[in-house]
Image 1 (cartoon, rainbow, N blue to C red):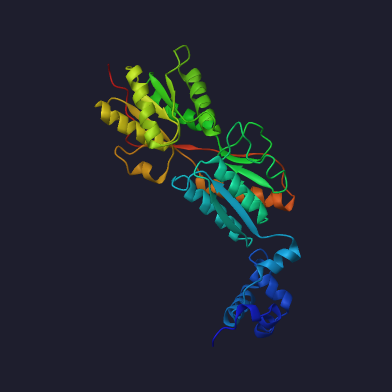
Image 2 (cartoon, helix red, strand yellow; image 1 turned 90 degrees about the vertical axis):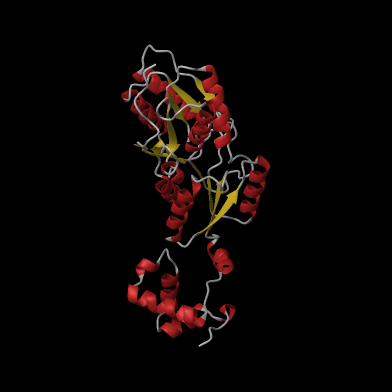
Length: 344
């Protein structure tokens, strides 16, 4: 049987074909309310809708409910392996309630971000999850003006006004530092991320606190700030670090890409990891176990982060949530890039 054109099929026709009330069809075809219908009946309705070629009229539904059933997610770099599991978690959670997600990619460009925010606002998205926050420029300023519920993810800004889903970066760096100290390292350096980002700033703070706690009385290990969270920036920063600090035996990098940049710098300088210098990363991205030596790194619950952000935004959109941040606990994955401190 050739399906009818979707524009000619009404919800009442589906109800007649399935032998149910039209309100049952509405509930059965809506992921948010499907649980209210018996599974066998829901399947019968779905089969009838498919057979007739019925598709819900999103525009009509939006006019009726005042909701677009669309949320926007803005990320700084789609090429980063950090974001796929986060986006998967967000989308999986919103699919349960029939929401679609639109991804905006800023490529770390402020003008592009403004265009994306304006476009999503014009399309009347019901909410936004933003992964591009900087400490000194809140992304939810005058453009949004409080009209759209917003949740920050992975990063936050200095105001603290917008709820965020984060990891405990102080704890994460503490775990890496503690591991190196247990291996006998005392000359530990930090390859920091950009200080304009909360991830760079908090991880540097975590390094200082860990040093103060575990190597009390010793001079703070050298710190070099990379210009970006990238392999090339990591290499440049690590070369600068090691050329000025010959006694360093371990490096705590603020993310996995910076750590891989350290690998390249060590190779260029003729130094071996971990025999001469141990390296730790941060994020436990997919490649961290594939490089050689496999990277000791701080593991983040990235998919869980996406799920929590989606739940927080859903609460804001329904008016049932406050502004408390969600902070997830990291763990350490020990691999081959760390070893006992060499004798010098």
